[in-house]
Length: 55
Image (tube, rainbow, N blue to C red; front, side, top):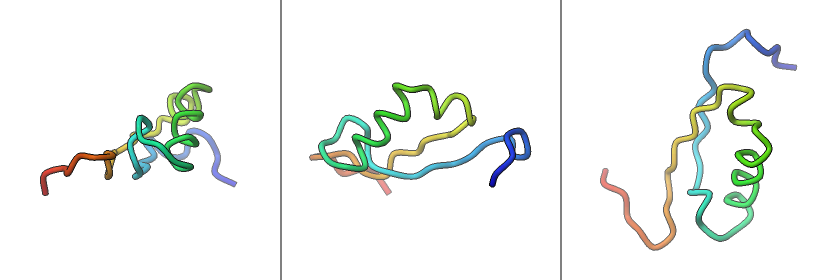
């Protein structure tokens, strides 16, 4: 189990919460419930539906 406070920031990579699909729904729920803020999660979007991000 990860003890809260042991790490300064957690980096999480994934699809945009605005996209359609399972992972986007989970990330959106995490945001809505405050999980990302509580655990100091830095969420980095790696995929946006219908958009290509620069490399």
